[in-house]
Image (tube, rainbow, N blue to C red):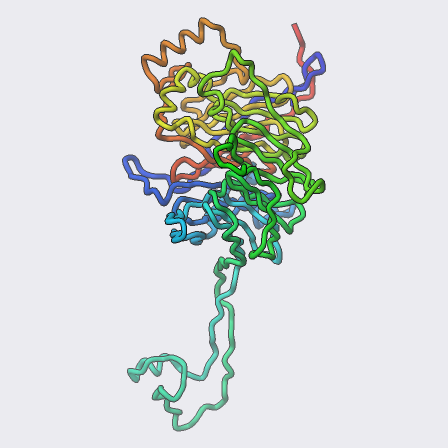
Length: 502
C-alpha cells in the first residue's frame, strides 16, 4: 500500500513472474484432444489444486513449499529463505467420467469435465465434485497403506534353490517340513510398507438434467450443493444421490417463447440461503431460498441498461454472461461477458461499480468473430483473495489482470508461457476512446483481423478460457490447451510514508 499526500491509498501494480508449468508440450508437438484442460480450481486453503480435462480425467496437485519446517525455529536453521510463493507438485489422477450414450434420446454424452469443485476435508481425506454434461460425481481421495506379510518360517531363498516357487502354503503346494523341524513357529506379521492414494467414487448424482450442466457450486453449510443447466437449477444433499430439489426453472410452457437461458450459478460464500445465477441476457439474479421452495422470483436483479442508439445485432450476444464469481467477502460479484469484466456491489442493482475492457479492440470485428463462432467462446473470471484484483482470459493464450481498488488504472496483459511479460502491456482499464481512434482501429481491423490496437498479433485458435486465483496469495493458475501454468506476484514492500507532492 502507498499512501499519497492527499490521503488516498493506492495499491502498486503487481509484477508477475513465472513459477511452474505442468504438461508443457515441445515445439511442433500435437496436442491430443483428450488432454486439453477444461476445468481448474484451488481448494479453500490453497494447499491443493485440481484440474479436469476433456478426456474425463481429474488431476490433483499439492502444495510443497514450506512443508516440513512449519516451526519458526526450523525455518531459522535453514540456509536459504523459504519460498515466498506457493509451489505445487503432481499428487495423483483418476478417471472421473467415461463416454456414454443416451439410447432414449440417441445422444452421445462426452466424458469432458465441465466443472470441478472442492468439498470440505475430513480425516485427512480429500473430497471433490466433478461434473460432465449430465452427471455429477462425488469423489474421496485418501492415502492407504499397502500391507504385506513378513516374518514367516518359510525360507524363500531355500525354496528358490529347490526350484519351487515361494508363495502361500496350502494343499496345492509341495511344501516339506525340514527333518529337524522348526525350532520355533513364527506367526506372520502384517506391516505397512508404502502408501498409495486411492480415489473412490462415493456418490453419483445422475438423471436430473435434460440439458448440459454448466455450473456446480458448494454451499457454505457443507451439506448441499447446486447443479445448473440451461433452464434449471437443482439443489442436492451430498449424502442423497437419488433425489434433488428443483429450485429454479426458467423453462416456458412453449419453448418458442424462450428468450434467455441460465449461463452460470454460484452459492454465496457465507450465507447458505443465498445464491446468484446469470443469464444470456446479461442479467444477474440474486435469490433467497427462504422465500419459497421454487425460487422463480428473485430478491435482487443486477443489470446494466444500454441506450437504444448503442444497440446492434451483436448486442445481446456479447452481453451474455459466461461466468460469475462471488468475492471472498460476499459483498461483490464479478461477471464476465464477451467483451468486459464487471464488478457488482450487492447493495447497488442499477449498474456495476467497475467495468474493465478485456479486448475492446475486437469490437469492430464482431462480424468476423460471429462467422467463425469465436463470439460464443465462454471465458471464466476470478478474484484475488484480498479483493483488490480481478483476472480473466483472452485469445493467443493471453490473460489480463486488473486492479479494482479506487483510483487504480492497472490493466496488465500477460501470456501463458515461461515468459509471461513477452507481450506485456499496461493500458488503462477503463479506456475512453474518441471517434478518431475508433476509426483508426476500424481501418486496422479491415487490414488485419489478428492485430490488436497495440500491434500485438492475435491467434483466435488459442484461447485461455480457464484460470483460478489462489485464495491467500497472489498466485494464478492458467490452463492453456494441455498445459497448466502457474504465476506469482510478490507483495510490494509497504511504504506508509506520504511522498512529496509537487
